[in-house]
Length: 60
View 1 (cartoon, one colour):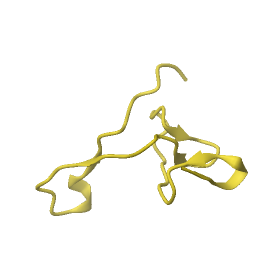
View 2: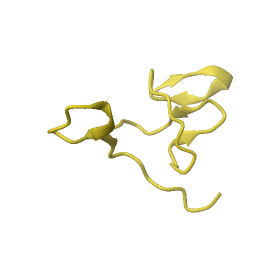
View 3: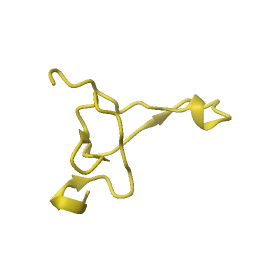
């Protein structure tokens, strides 16, 4: 983890725009999970991968 802009604690170099993920710090637009896991071993294109770390927020 690294402190990003505005003092956010983020996975270094990992941005996030997914508003509904509990690990997205919407102030810094970065991932605050302790690690990320990207899935789809057979992916051939960017659109075929997905963030397995995604966890929906319980409330907005």
